Length: 367
Image 1 (cartoon, one colour):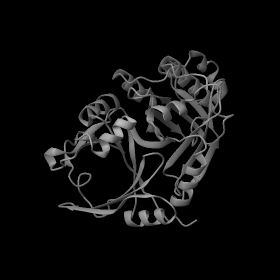
Image 2 (tube, one colour):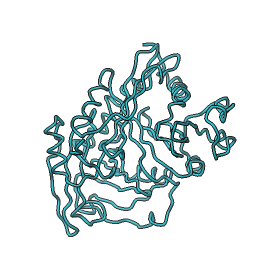
Image 3 (cartoon, one colour):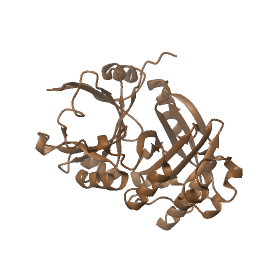
Image 4 (tube, one colour):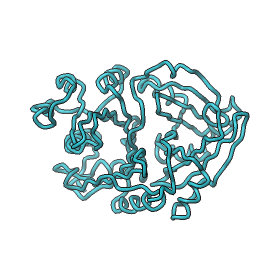
């Protein structure tokens, strides 16, 4: 099939936050990111402040509005701190916009070119699920530090491993009941994505609740965007809890890849990052369930890291607690040893761990 909307990579994830300076300190201390560039009042931008946080091939942009009526401020009031934009680097931001909108996507930012001493920075954006933007970034004629208005802060990240995170593995969105298929079609029809794998409410279920999920990927298999929707259950599911506190659909979690999950999680825990708790019984007969692995099972049990295997290999994964007071956005740390899946064998254990936290919050209620 003709790849009418080619994508090079995930360029960045932009977070709208209430206080970008404090958020930058959090992601630096707890997740090992380095603030490498800044845009704000001091660089001539009067309405917003943005901090570029980098670690290996991961770019987070933390942005805050400087007035109560700015769209970023309104977004934070509605959603709390959240992933507001999934920015994709493309060969041509104008073509990406025209191709997607001609196929039914809603345009939000028409093709725009900003020029400074470093060249021309081109971008555009369409509407994704909820208030999430999908941005197209064209850097082919731009050699600046990140984007116009950003000034370099430090080059320490070039020599720093951070906590060992290296890339965005996938970005998971939650949508309302009955909407998943519509967004599957949206990514297929407007961006040329294809369905990689799907999970029904029998695969992802506990005694109390369930969800359904479909994983969409771009034509080259570089970008993976799972989409979840709630399923009927006895009690409120994690997806329903997210939708309630996020006030609509949005990005539920971001999976970050590492080459050494034991080292990464050990360092993150030392900085205060809280992870979901895995019961010790999960590790009983683990190798009988998943086969031989290179890592120490005792060490995995100590840290609460989950293991799963598919036909291509195995993976190790763990999930943080929500990173703000609302039970919405959280992160996954993942290490792949050939496996291409998403931890299907861990879904029940993960869901039960999330339900325990829901119960602590008083949100695992009958529906």
